[in-house]
Figure 1 (tube, rainbow, N blue to C red):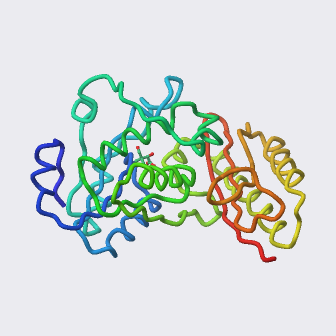
Figure 2 (cartoon, rainbow, N blue to C red):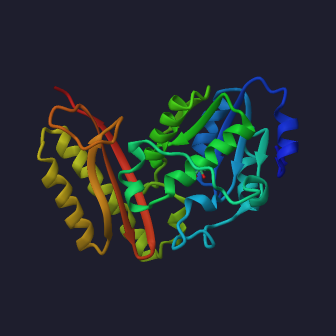
Length: 278
Ligand code: PAF
């Protein structure tokens, strides 16, 4: 694995690669990222991963400074896989001047995470588009844990005519169901024991819907009430149409339940997809 920190070396290294498969990350890698790397390996191209903690997607009040930076550990993990290039740029090369060019995002970016974290998706999209321009991949892999981000990536590629295949990776979970996330390391032991409840309430909604319950409002409210009674500060627990993330209608078949809630100082998100028979 070749570690590259600057843009000229990256361009030189990738210039003659006909098929580049790209996994962008913010580091602090865990099994969730590794599952994306394994998908990338199966694509059998030049495998490029990146690690960059993207200031543009953090609000001033968020955890940019505290965000775990664990490059040595990350490299050790990646050495077990056939990663060809690890791109670890510094901020000056990615944003040499104040970022004033910004994209207007589609409606799917204004709901859920976009509502709770204004500016978040604009920051993500701006950075990912820069990385796409630098790496010029044929394939890019994104995890379903950030489901809305994945949908926005699909929309970006479609609407900006990028010739990049967006491939999705399943959510990696701990044995108790908690979705793996770099932010899980912020949880105290007590919070960690409680954290899987987010997955539990989403699973309960999925089960109810799959046995025919269509009282979506009540399902959402019950889930929220359970989390609140367990000490969570809930941003949203919602059942949405899976592709567009618009509120669900009674005759929709492909659904997703998404939740975001804060336990102590840690904000966690999760989701579960479901298809219902007619
Ligand atoms: O999903 C992430 O880790 C980040 O949002 C991404 C796509 C690497 C952009 O910073």
